[in-house]
Image (cartoon, rainbow over all chains, first blue to last red; front, side, top):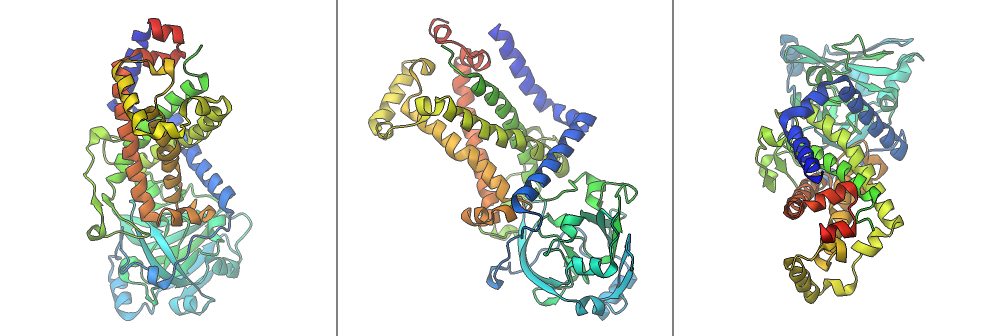
Length: 249
Length: 223
């Protein structure tokens, strides 16, 4: 009796090693379990830290000596190269979608808004971290100016860069969008944003991993659903590689 | 008398499965950036205190490099692992398993107790019959008190969404990259425990049966 149990136990262990995990992960039940687990993490984080809980901020001397660029490190277009060389005179950031008052801003307009400066840590999904000082208007300032409509459930970031031939984009929910540390940064460590870090504008979503912090921003859109955008999973990496939409774990 | 309480057996197997998934998916995640640092930041391999090997496909979940799917498994298995640990601590305190079998007295920490443990083991004395010897108590204490909760706490600490709930935890661990390094070290500590645990369990496979059925003192002494 016990002998049979031992055999089935060993068989069970061997099955794990034989790729059964991939079969489970590809099944509907597997996908729904993973989604549920991801949702629990988000709910637990927000219950424990509060919706407005702040990511730690550091002193100037805590900053890393440099700030790594990862993913897209430039935009491959003549327009971008000319803009980069000239200080982005023609760059526009639009705020649209489900809003009463669409905005079309120059870089000077963005700099003229009330600013927030924060020294925060950037955690990449790969595991590394860098610390830098970011400045820019809070996303909530832009959303309030554009008067986001009630039915908007997500804020979408449109980007100039492409990866593997697809336009980069990202999205966050309204809790993250109105978080005080969620800013549209135009400066890193007191200088205009470097090319590799998303010049001229990037999102800072301080309680989530780096791939949410969309770079080379051209548009901010309020939407009710993510289904019809890209492949429908809410972001470039979510669509392309199956990354988690909630990147707080 | 039953050797292993139902709560212990249930937790043992759920936890075993969770640990296998967490460890193997963790090796896949490690392959994404194979360098460990101390402090809050770290991204340049030049600053790493350890360059980790690339773990081969047979050791990882999934068996090819896939950070997204590995993280799915890690995020999923973290729940039974963390809630299970909470459950077994409550159960061990409630059913007095902790006080009776695992809590040590000052006498257990003496060299004499250590030698006695080794002798008792060499003589093939049955641990379940006589309770755990001092060395076993100390090792189980390290696993339950340090390694397993350490995995949960360092895992929480490296989650940027959890950090606003307890920023002191990241500070206590010496920064986010230190917490990540400790997460890695504790994972291998648990791996080491599992190896020793398996060798000893397989040496007398009736113990595996007892962890399933609960066993009985009579069965273990006569069987």
